[in-house]
Image 1 (cartoon, helix red, strand yellow):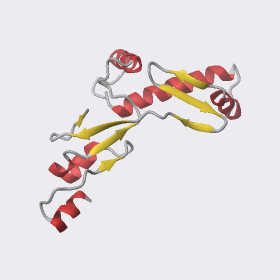
Image 2: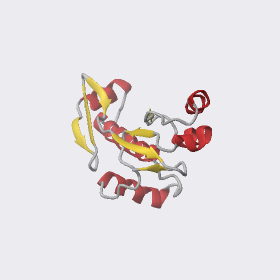
Image 3: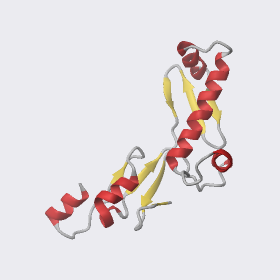
Image 4: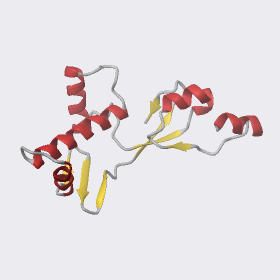
Length: 145
C-alpha cells in the first residue's frame, strides 16, 4: 500500500499509517523498505525490553533458562502470558479438565494480575486484555518505543 501510494502521488508527506499488532513489522519493512520507517504499530503486550514490568522480567528469566535467546519479541511475551493463563485455567479445572470446565474456569477468573498485565474474563467478556501500547518501525526495520 505504501509503495503504491508513493508511486501514484510521488514524494509527498504521507499521513501517519498505523498497523495492528497482528501484522509483522519485519514483513512490512521487507516489502516497503524505507517507506515503512515511521509506521505506527499497536501492541497488546508490554515489549520484551520493558524490564520494569514483572511479567517481562519473568518472561526474560524463563527465556534465558529454557528458550531461544534470539526470540525476545512482543509475540513471544504474548505467548508467555497466554501459557500462564492456560496453566491457571487448567489448574482451576481440577484433575479432570474438559473444554466446558476450562471455559467455566476462565469465566470465573474475574481480573487477575500477571506481573503488571491484568487479564479479565467473565461470562460476558472473553477478550481477556485491554492493554494497548504504540510502537513505531524505525529506519532499520526494528520497533522503537
